[in-house]
Length: 494
Image 1 (tube, rainbow, N blue to C red):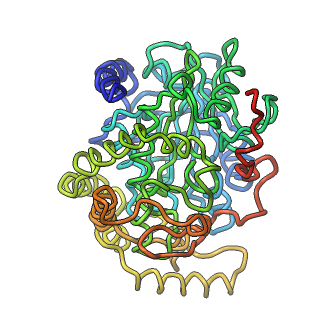
Image 2 (tube, rainbow, N blue to C red):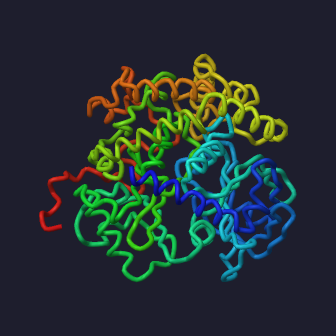
Image 3 (cartoon, rainbow, N blue to C red):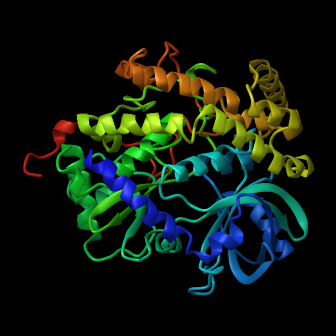
């Protein structure tokens, strides 16, 4: 297949460009836990903790792995995770550091934004770390990341995952230029279903970088072509997008474009051709709490890899898999993934390595959402009994104090969502399931009603809404779910 040859030839180019960024080697050592020290006025920090949902920047100084930089912007960040923590007794928020918020073009050796993620809903503390590593091994443009102990005004805040922001600095280090555009879809139009020829109709596809001339026309042209399902190679890097969906599907990462919130991804466009960039993987490895229990979280159909929506409402994957050649290549990448980077042997070794790296730091972390016993269980099989006990504790506490719940009595388990399958078990079960679908032993698609209700393959219907996520109808203004436009509404003269 021609596109596979293109994929192989592009790997060396991308890899060499990634290695040129000074800040990647200096600050994102995946074999170490670095220290990040933040200093700001006590009054500003108190206000930030009191009013987290404002997401208001405060001026601060930071020391990242020994390098100090002053006059940076600091704010809390997050969506459902932020509101869930804000409504609890915890103050373990995720943070964003903007190095050029107050001083134009200021950076940390080229890095302009740094995200500090709190491992919300992840008792293993490594879903996102492992996911980015696996995506990178499949040569998908991936942000730099590493573990970091965070200190604010000399006080330990906990063990976080530091993740490079996806904006100009990312594009420059990965693509070697600043000729492209980056978008973050989050709201109207983020499903990429055609609405009309007005760019305002897609106001949920927000530009992250300063748009180049003709960029709006390129976006509209891509959406039109995508929904018609023709000449896709002219507008989409089909090979890269198929690799992205192969990994995302294998990891059952449904808090993404493939779920009913259709978010947590970026688009990169250059010369009218679009790629998908991965983002926010703390709910991967079946952690979105969908599929009705441990079995359901590993049985997602590979040719119908959506939940709470339909393939027609997700054309970026739906239209690609309608093409037999693309589907064959997608299957090839799934097979390559489960037999290579995601193999049980490699994943077992990597899980053990990362656990050894972070365990001593988690033991000292007094703000963590989960206990060390839950951490150890999450590395292996996970336990259903533990979930029942913890849910009872949370329910009891919530009845006593409807406005919040106590971390010591099970807050972390509440945040974990419906699925408690451990990493090792997930890997083995998912490999078996994907392998059986690829071989024809199991079906690769199911009924529309099954995926609409969140049920996966293997006869496990039902959907459990992840804790902290919003029920249907409670979306913030401007972030209502899209994707219900019938394909037949596309004008014939597009």
